[in-house]
Length: 294
Image 1 (tube, one colour):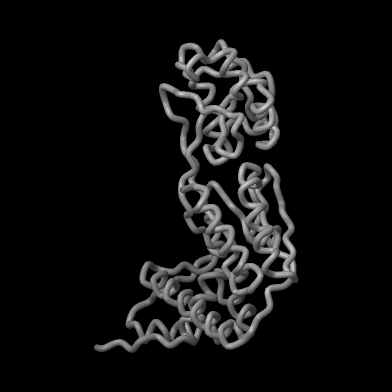
Image 2 (spheres, rainbow, N blue to C red):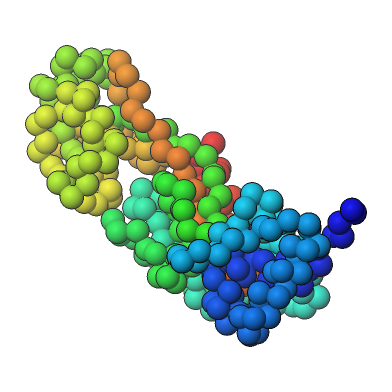
């Protein structure tokens, strides 16, 4: 038997069920009764000739075929939203909340300033903190993350990998590190700068200890504070190469083993990208971050 192509209305229902995890919640989101959602899902399954949505005590579950249809529905949704935007002259105005790890503040803020110069009605609120702002709960509109979000409501775009290294001030190198070389067996003789106990299990902090760092003379939960302490010659610290390039007074050390890299993602709520102000900020941050990562 030949199956029909699902309609947009059918796909829209399936997309809501996927996002909201129940017929009841999907109906509320679409402004229809749960029984209507159930009927439309059953009709879609008849069209496809197979069950694709399974109801359980903890909500609905979609099989692999249904998830492929969800991906198609998302693309159609974006395309329709784009057509609607192109049909009008939506002004870029209002406030966009941006969440950044501190290590990205210096390269990203100038890009946001350039964007602000193009859009006089745009305002930016920057959230910089060790606790990651929850995009799904609306604590921020856009964020740079070093892990991919597992939330179905959040889009995570992989932007690249940030290389890291050990850095010291020029004065520290001239005084303590001839040739800017730091073999592993001499690491214990040096002063170190690093994160405090609250972030002690981070992969990079673990790597520092494995390389031989033990005499920490300055610790903080702030990446900017660590950066400044290294600049002031207090000790050796692990920074991204992106950070290290910002300051001519820093020297990257020659090591026996490379520190782990950092995967960088741009994250934003699936619905927020339809908003012109969020869309232009996402585009600017993505372009600048990719440029910085090389």
